[in-house]
Length: 178
Image (cartoon, rainbow, N blue to C red; front, side, top):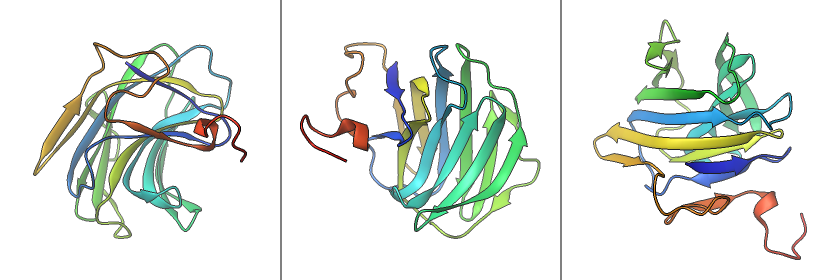
């Protein structure tokens, strides 16, 4: 299990696989009961930087697909959905060119594909924000190339797994300022 705690500025962990295009991203996510009300978590895909990417985000009451361009967020799709703390959810997005479908626990949530052509490729980044205390496990990408990770051995709690890197203002070296 890889863990992240988000503040108002999101905690980000880059999945170590480089830039990808089409395929399916699948992540097991559990929000811990210590999370404050208003928590948000999920993953970015076709990620270029914190100002340009897509974000599949879950909160206590909603699942949302967001496009961020030059720092401006636009909701492309959302649905009301209850996510309980201390429960594992398998959240996934399937991407084919400009078309996206979203599933939770193998149940398709987007009845028609969402279409957007803004980003054609990018990295995958796990996110936690707004006082979310989150566990991630069994992260998979299936496409022309396939990658998967689980975190069942050798991890130190609070330290990114080997090959992973963390991005966020809460991860600045000691003595650095925001």
